[in-house]
Amino acid sequence: MTGLTLDRVTKVFDDDGGDVVAVDDVTIDIEDGEFLVLVGPSGCGKSTTLRMIAGLESVTRGEIRLGDEVVNRKPPKDRDIAMVFQSYALYPHMTVRGNMRFGLEESTDMSDDEIERKVTETAEMLGISDLLDRKPGELSGGQRQRVALGRAIVRDPEVFLMDEPLSNLDAKLRAEMRTELLRLQEDLGVTTVYVTHDQTEAMTMGDRIAILNGGKLMQVATPLEAYHRPANRFVAGFLGEPSMNFFEMEVRGDRLVGASERTAEPSGGSSPEDGDEFVYPVSAETREAIGDASAVTLGVRPEDVELVRTADGPHDFETVVDVVEPTGNENNVYLAFSSESERTFVATISGMRSVEAGQPAIARIPESAIHLFDADTGEALRNRSLDDLEETEPRV
Image 1 (cartoon, one colour):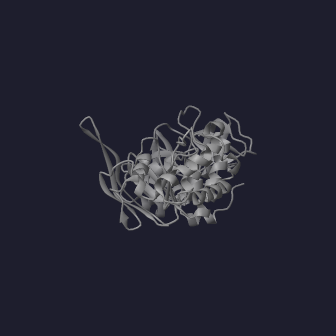
Image 2 (spheres, helix red, strand yellow):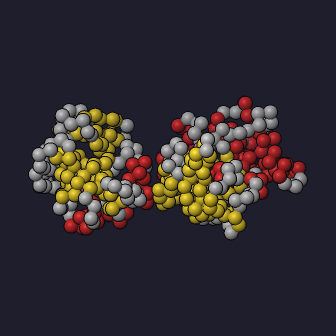
Image 3 (tube, rainbow, N blue to C red):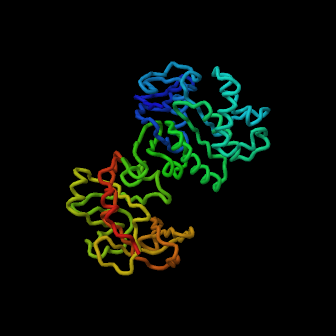
């Protein structure tokens, strides 16, 4: 097995004489045996990146290296890479056995007995031994996906590439297949690059995730690091459901002030000025992290917004419940600073707590949990640390 490197990889398409940059100067080192997930919104360049690795798209600039070898100019068949497509791409006139054998028959000099042994072993691993004599039209979506995986596995490649392979499955089967894919990749130990727009897949499957936006690489990190210590506002807002709450704030000494509608005074904090919606006092340490920025975006995850019984601190705010979304084990509670305000933010609380629309609520936004981003560049100025998370007492 071997690792994979993308070194300042760029892809530019010609669109009627104009250049369209689909992938812009992306550099990622993928370790031997690592499961890396490329994630981002539609059109961000993740599938184009995967196709360049596979050799299905040419590289405009930069290098793709498999181990120490540059493979930019190698045809797909010579890259020792196997790809699993979203559409399965099975030959409908062939049986499952025929689909799994085909690549080995065309690209290796293995004997029929060796090929049959390889197909049989892989089918047993995937639990599809009883399907070998059926054709794709007789199979369910999950079974077809297993066949597509099996066709890739029998080749024993250096790298697996997977382009949204679970997107055609229903939600329950997708969850089951995620677990199976992870177990399979760990058993095989093959370097894997997995493309998805689904943040749940990214967070649950990847050893690391690479977040793309507009062709640019936003951050490469473990799922936990990207979630709790995002490099910029885009990453912070993309990961998490419900999304992170954001407040646009001016820096005024040791306070952050959101200008809009007037709201209730935060207990223990400074009184908001006329026209101010949200006043958030900050410590000297947080103020130092802000530096010279005159405007910041304050972010806080919904699960870090607490609903408490009494306002007794500088970061407790009087609010009104706007909408409650029960999800079973949790409630997503949308809050407004006043009944007249159209702007809301969300708190995620236990599903066992009874909350109703229209009732008053006190929202606590702990300073230890907030993120701050430069209002102009979006770059993170302050994130909550993972050490802080380990020390935080569970909420009641």
